[in-house]
Length: 401
Image 1 (cartoon, rainbow, N blue to C red):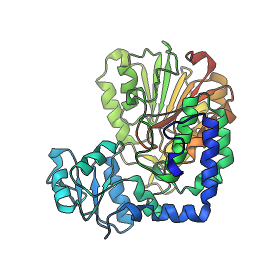
Image 2: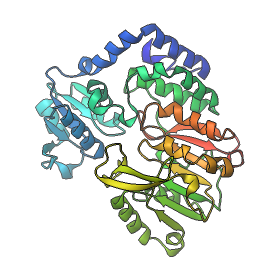
Image 3: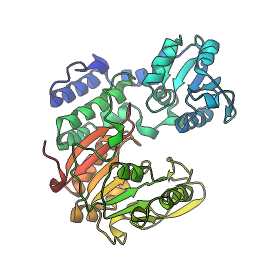
Image 4: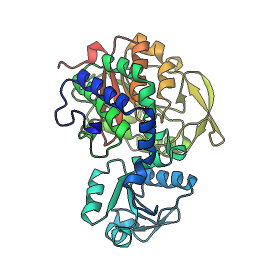
């Protein structure tokens, strides 16, 4: 039965989750290990040649990880004609039709963009024989790729079955429970075209169907980057009392401040920028500052030591009513450091889940342990496991069903 369990007719979510785990246990650990470790080679072109499609951040990150494994692609390809004929990190960039003409029958075309289904279809229509999602590389080169970006060995799901059930029972609607099931099936069998379409990406962090508006909103943006979430907040016509932007990466913070400098005074004067990482302690930590969305707390770091703060120890001049976190895998520590704030103020939470596979079930369980009055929801705004968010909504902000 595999990854098509109840795919056409999803049915009742509890029965579906029972069937997923029954199928996992029938396969057994040894068979599962052989399957995922050999997954790439079964669907890839013989000979090991690779073409990387996508020269953006994900593509360049993939190239860097392949380099750690001693693998160099034949070329990059991209739909952006402005990049054709250039080089990215020393690798030639060619047009899709040219890439397929050169390598369509002899290389694996790995699509390294976050919403890759349209490009995979494009390459097949051009005549490419072996078209793969970038996620397949994680299982081919686990030491270089995993556990980043929410993809890990399927054994992680088996090991944490009890907590997955705990998460399932905490979720507040069938859409969330089916999203959990969808993700478990996709992550265990890694079939690229399995998942339903994502939610409207324009609602990322601000779902129209879950959270009521608040004209006195105090929005806290943890991992503010260059202000992209604040831009989304403002585009939606949201009224607010105050905005807090926490961004520890200095380059990102400069971009954020440049954006704010261009805003009307009524917006600019209502934003406080804080140079802190959020964590479960007050102090300092090692930080990998990349100057883009992947800046993150790191055990190794890159020589940058930054200040970190617990959420409930920050001197709020306005009490938070809505907290968003996209902090590259440090969400559990940041939540743990904000437990007192969550219990006392019950702000809406929008917490990213996709940086580690176990965050899918661990973060909802953690939020419940800190403040059990929240209603918990899962929503996804991109293909595969990316742009997945847990919303924790207090009773007074929930929209009627």
